Image (cartoon, rainbow, N blue to C red; front, side):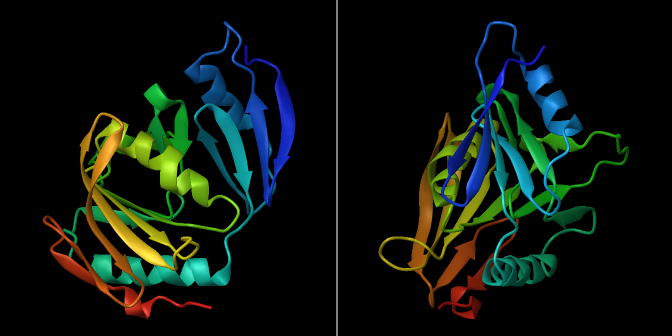
Length: 206
């Protein structure tokens, strides 16, 4: 059975912390994540074994994701799709993550699962929010690299030195190599199989 659950509040983020007792396993954690009734409109993820409930993102956040999605649709194959609410599983990192965008081929046979293995993704995109930017900068890239996702695009309006976009690739273990890092206003180039230049000057800023 799932271990005891305690509540903790972080800045603008409500998290449920699952104790690491000997009886807890990945299947129990996922079952709890699937079956619990969570606040409507929130994004519920498992990040390093912690079930984290994030509020709905701001309008600016959604505009950035939508503009990236629009550009990606112009270059992906017909049998690939882009999802904004798809959970991807990284059991080795106790992670059930919902990137702002997931680009993945669609298999011919679709199961009834609420998530897919993260290794199926070709690209994930995260747009940081003020309240949980640390996850997008540290915890999530470690999980995405562990899963072997080839490319990770981090759009960070809340970066300490000003808004940035960073493209990571060539995962090895828990670590990516930085392929490109630009400030808003400069282009970021996604390599093959996308071969796409994204103009970060299209992203809204305060």
